[in-house]
Image (tube, rainbow, N blue to C red; front, side, top):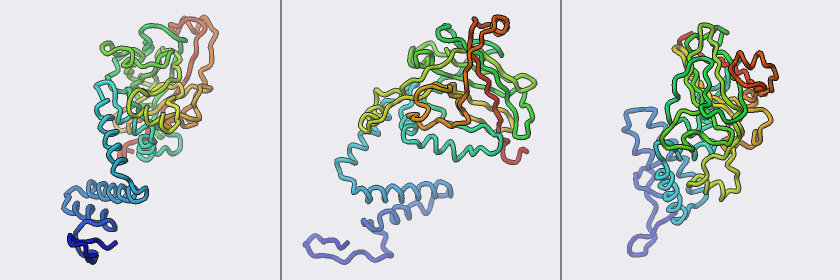
Length: 307
């Protein structure tokens, strides 16, 4: 588009070889400024980001007021973050970016366990616990026995694998939401035994809303979306020579399986939590009778070049 000079005369557009900024060539000009970037991956990412961002601005013809509101929203998102709350992760989650990045970087083939989002509550270290210990420190809720194993892509057991777990309580809250000091309830870091097996006692988690009292909650309200996640237990499993896996076990039949606010549900991760009415088994597990149980066997991918 032709532009007017200071005298009001319509001037010719700049030549194609010019580096001057203009609406038509805005992304090209800005992308060219990254030509000296030494890291080729950084150059590629920034160039693509600029091209897509400029295309978006042109597509919706963003107004000054809308851009100012967007900057205000991002500023408020950052100001909402604390040591125990990550509003930017929450924003990434509700836009589906977290799940997309997770899926692209952890494509599951064959028998490999599928990954899902880490979520905003893995912000404190899980206390190390012995196999069979309970992670439910206050004892409230429906008792549950969680068992499973960790193996590699060829079915080989992975002894010593670290199994980090965390979950919401029977009212849908994480420990960091209930207290600013005492963290560790419904969290545990377990070391698999010589056969790659693990087990621990817990409670059946409840579905819950993600934090909706900040900018992300306002976004959900403005778009008529609910903030709820289906009931689940988080797992992060790691071992030398294998790719670390971040995943969930979802409770079959829980509300919101088909409308998770952060798009984290995969059918392969949904499990039944059947009731067990067996006094002998309950006594052996150290749980009251009856109790619920779930088994979750994890298959890790090998690191590239390891196998």
